[in-house]
Length: 42
Image (cartoon, rainbow, N blue to C red; front, side, top):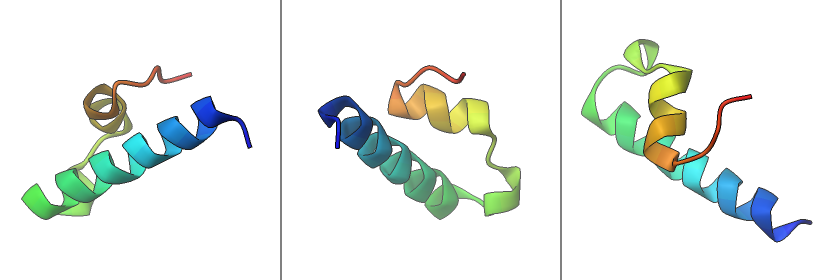
């Protein structure tokens, strides 16, 4: 796999888990996760 893909995937996974630990997953937005992971939302 492409190293950029793997890096983005890992960053997104971590951002989701961090956000879910802070509050209910239903309140977590895609924009927030992308911002925390420092990836563009396409």
